[in-house]
Amino acid sequence: MENDFFTSTFDQDQDQTQFQAPPVQPSMDRKVNIWTGRFEDESPLLEELGISFSNITQRTVLVLNPIQKEATLDVIQDVDLTGPVIFCLVFGVFLLMAGKVHFGYIYGMGVIACCAMWMLLNLMSRTGIDMGRTASILGYCLLPIVLLAGLGIVFPLNNTIGYIITFGVVLWCSKAASLMFITALQLRDQTILIMYPAGLIYACFALLALF
Amino acid sequence: MQGNWTPDDPQYAQHGNPSYQEPEYYYDNSQTVNNPYAQSAGDFSPQPPMGQHQGTQDPNEQLFSETFDSYTQDPVTGMAVKYGAQMMGEKFGDVHGRFNLYLSFLKYYFDVDTAYVAKKLSIILAPFSNKSWKRMRVQDDTTGELAFASPRDDVNAPDLYIPLMAFVTLVVLVGFSMGVLSDKFHPEVLGTTASSAIICIVIESVLLKLGFYLISTDFVPPFLDILAYCGYIFVSVVVNLSVGMVFNSLVYHICTIFSSFMIGIFLVRSMRDFLLAPGDMGNKRRQIFLVVIVVAQIFLAWFMGSLADWSTHADFDGMRMREAYIPPLDPITADDPEGILTNTAVL
Image (cartoon, rainbow over all chains, first blue to last red; front, top):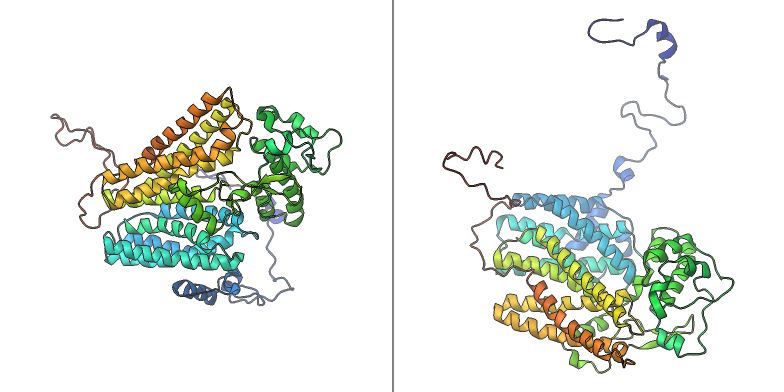
């Protein structure tokens, strides 16, 4: 068919030969639920994605408990990055509510901190650690800084009391992070040597929240 | 394996020791002949044995050796590369293996423990407390040759952990001082401070290495050793800055001069063994070199302290939006009182 508006490629001669209807019946191997369109024997979506809320809450409680002495190994077993990403986003939103737009800096500092910590841990320990696990541990222990940013919305931190609170929060974060790292890497006599770099990383994030 | 990747001391291992045997897993003939950097190391680069080379030639190792030329001339580092290439490639073959393959030469410099760090910090700030400055040598179990001890066993060994931590502490402290003292904190400050400090140290290390070559000592320390020694100045700069933030600026200047003098003494004493020992002709040149090192530390400490802004605390008028830097507007002329012609794009 031709007209002045467009050139049509619809050709009646080729219509029957080229146009093929898609197969109507589903494959006979797996049963399909016709209401949801998904296969019957698949696991639920969250489980497939690897997000387990119980694990997330377990790790969050571990971080939030400032007098924790040791961590069990199963907490750090699977690499979970959704918690850290959520925490970074909430951190950015809290800073936004305080009048600072620092999303790019959070992302950049997070990436540099993860890479630097990964390299340092691999150089200092006998067994190595992979990047996903470092990012996961560092991200989870960012939670107290997020709370500090939340506090910074209503209470200005730019005074002496604010500095003391920030220092305490940074210590809390780095203690939790070093606890998890030492459990993951089985280091025995290098606690302070792991806590100090973690403390520096969280101090960088705390500077964003502080000023 | 821990603490065995150590640089070799050629004075002991080659020139004076007639029973020195080359280990059989040395790097081979073809690598030294084709390597354009083989001649630049001078007496320090050992000659491989003639004849058939032992062991496999890992292609990754070739790439690695050509990339870092100045410290793969060390015989033990070359051995470490070959050893690591074979063992880690077999065992891991993943990111861990490749990390250990390419970066295992750094493990010597990070093999520290808490006691070493504490002692080293006290030596940097007060070098008179150290009794002996010679680096220990230990018998390497696998090769049987004498090499430098790892930092865990010897407090005089250089490490890269302390300079790295002190560098990041300096960046954080400069950011903190910007916020506390002058209320001009912006996250870009962290980046600019880090870049300035790193470039300062790297240039100083390169110049020092060049100086060592020009003075033509028998033993030129590897580049990472020199980088470690130059990086120790961050510790004193951190101390200066903290003192300056707590007290006033006069105390800061006194502290700077004092601590940079201390670190000059520390550097000179660390390097005196191989710098001044058997030199009769170039003795005056070497003494001048040492004096230049000491004087340079003062300038470096002053420069790095100036990275922090010492202007007085601005009035804090509550929370306000931190904007990016907006350049000042062009002046409004008399013909154009509303500034339309010059300032059309105002954010």
